[in-house]
Length: 250
Ligand SMILES: Nc1ncnc2c1ncn2[C@@H]1O[C@H](COP(=O)(O)OP(=O)(O)OP(=O)(O)O)[C@@H](O)[C@H]1O
Ligand SMILES: [Mg+2]
Image 1 (tube, rainbow, N blue to C red):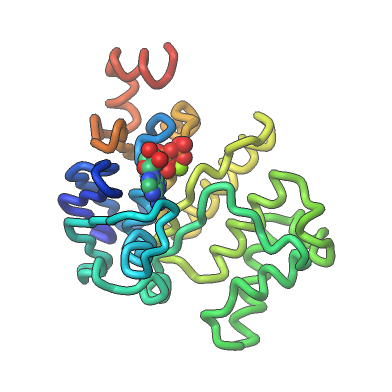
Image 2 (image 1 turned 180 degrees about the vertical axis):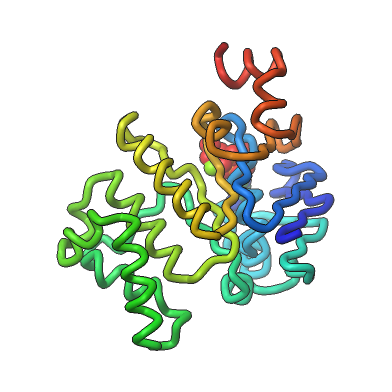
């Protein structure tokens, strides 16, 4: 098992955001995590990748108050929930955050270079990764010298994913990549996420577009009000009438 989250609970002050969540992601899987606004999807990713803990320890929560996190997270068989976020990244558990905007005043190339900080200046590895990213997102090569703030929404999302790939993830957690994108751009982006998965990178995909996610993922979790309400293969979930009605509008 690549990732194993057990009995994870997170609360801010008196509000419990995640209740006893258990999820697993196996090597080479593409797993979907869906659920309505405010369900706790982003909080779950932030807890896994060490950001909730960082907030707690540095008292930097958006809201001043007590943050509590319980439960365990194992990655590649080792317990990581006590590790700082930068060590979790180094192990290959990478988070591509929601509404991620690249450094707007830097060019596309500079953003990718900044993303490669874990390579410690190894030029040949950087070039190899860069080629891979340009192959996956040719538009980033075309726009390499363009200032990132002038990219379209879809291009910015591709750059955000490209930058995450520079960290050589084993598990890439992508938070709502399709938000705000036109249907055709969205389909194209999903297609490329599928290519990343086929290249051997395990993916945990957080999305509100349930139909698209089920079409891509082999297994899915449904989170609602901080609790897992269902899990299964896309096929299993699509056969469930309640889920079809609530999440697919069918
Ligand atoms: N730092 C924080 N301090 C206080 N409350 C928080 C904090 N972060 C998240 N929350 C609350 O936790 C709940 C879950 O938020 P979260 O962002 O995880 O949901 P989500 O499923 O990602 O929603 P969306 O689909 O809108 O992105 C929300 O009610 C939110 O207000
Ligand atoms: Mg979110």
